Length: 249
Image 1 (tube, rainbow, N blue to C red):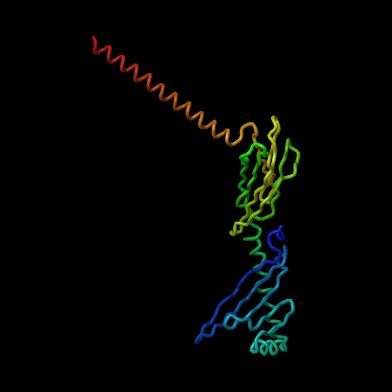
Image 2: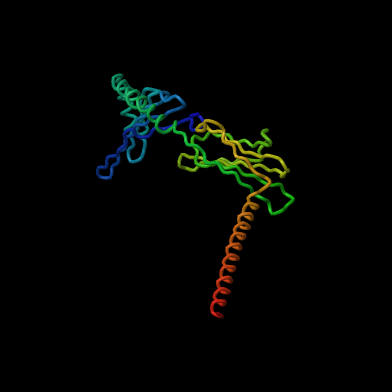
């Protein structure tokens, strides 16, 4: 499941700070790179930036420093000759990255959010084109999801699928199916996601499309209002006749 999220994750800045002195900036970073589903499969990187230029870097996989500026090259050459310094530097891998890695995976990356699913219809202005059904799943996590169309319980090929990242760790997906309505035929959208204990199935009632539902609601509302106004008119008419009869007496 994790591989479907990101194959190379970064736990940024266990420590990250900068020092400013007379316009000189020094930035120090401690980074943990997670490379798969195993939170212990991690690489520790230590970097020193001088005025936003990477000057010196340590990599736990190589277990050595590399310099990228004259100062960095000189420092790397000196530290690499000291086994004790390299041992202390690599100890950070176990002390921080492998310690906090499982906590990060449990707290963030293994979180699951169920999708909100909606089934709708999109009709082409021309009657010559088939009806397009749209099955949408919103705000789900992780990314891995499967949307399937069923016709009378049997899986049918979908016309197209559009998957989008919301930019806030959540995802949405839209699946489209072209079909020609047939009396008695049952069209369904089935959504499978790790957050669901069983597939979520939504059925489309092709005998009453959304436009028909809107017309029905308007029609029923009009009928109810008509009854109310008719009843009010009869009551008003009856009261007026009664008042007129009392006055004639």
